[in-house]
Length: 87
Image 1 (cartoon, rainbow, N blue to C red):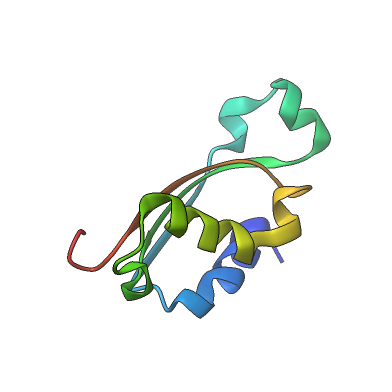
Image 2: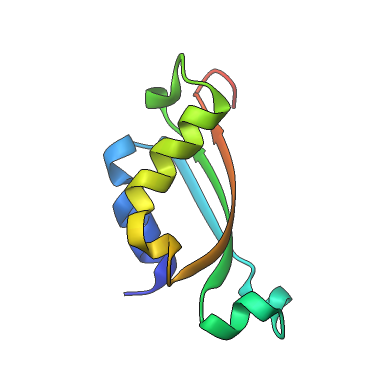
């Protein structure tokens, strides 16, 4: 299973209305962090579960679900997390 597929699976519990995962790893070839094998990703997610949550709380929810992936498979991730009304 690819890293984007694993990310999608881990975030499924947020019941996203929209989930876009862009693998930007190729743009960071030669970057020090890329040597460890972790990829660079851009994530856009829209979920009703973000209602009444601060931006930091939304990011914490996502980071908690990704767990150990942030230690090995993901070197860097840019997150845009919205509620359906913000999208």
